[in-house]
Image 1 (cartoon, helix red, strand yellow):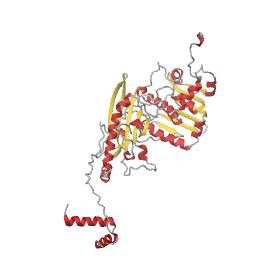
Image 2: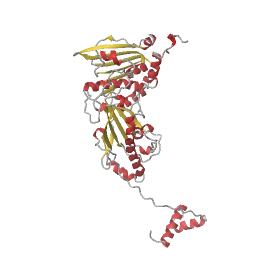
Image 3: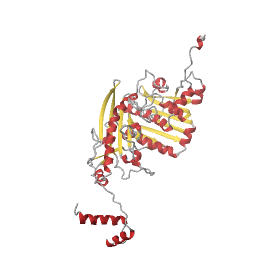
Length: 454
């Protein structure tokens, strides 16, 4: 007989387990991006726009996100409106999104763990400050978190204290993390980490930076990557726009693809760094943020049935598929926002469109090898244009190169005494003529004498 008090198994999570799990499979760079995403969501809301199509003209130049990284401290601050006290109490610090919580319009966050996951990954002394507008005047609070004390307080209390605070210089959020984790310390000591962070921000937030948003690291603003395709002459990249209904919500999709740079003349793999090879491939964008860049794997179709594996020959191809929706959970992004969910219905729906664009480039580069010089002249007529200026067009247009007709060849091989070959070479006027050339000259001599003209 089981006692009544033993008839329910305790399935409640422990804080320590939860913290380990949410921080385990995400990089420090992606944690920082989670915090940047929150700031960008605030900027879009204040600007009154949404990260919609490439045609969107929302001006984000009034908003700035600053990141400061030291060996013993991380800080990110913005002027993007701040977290309200109500949101802090009800939503911002919960682990996961509550059922009754409304999805933020066109945000990049889905699961409600980004900020908590990020700060726990970075360190154990955390100070989150917010200044926001309340009834026409600024109001502020702070949430200090000592992770060790919070863990030690027991698994029944998951809440964080909210305290009054002085106003920040601007309405926004400031997050400071000290007592860094060992992983954060080692990364922040490396100048390479800072360089890679800047490079990734320039690429992954290129569409936001294009609209004037300022993101600075160590006090230096980052210039966004200019994404371009070549247009003109016989080259026309595709730029197709679609609208789908999913769960009574609109999901908007844009597909762009074409030549970003001419294919290489030598398509053999090289140990040297090749910027074209590094940037070529497929890009996936969700609500304005690039979540998969320069992909050449099965994620974007390469190497799947009826679709060849990526080869250096295809360098120069660039494809971008952009998804945007009021509800981020309808988009094909993963929890780390660093890849795509292959099982997503909307993603599977548009994979054939990606395949068609890729196939055109594969066909072009296959035939191009036979007339490289002629192809290069045609390619020079196409000029690079930013993707925002690409003409709307349903399909990729590339030069129609007819492969040269191959003349059937025959190999002729025979052996003669060396002295006789030398004598014939001498008769042809060159005693040092190669045996191969002696054979070819003797064939041409006999053909002209016995057959005549072709």
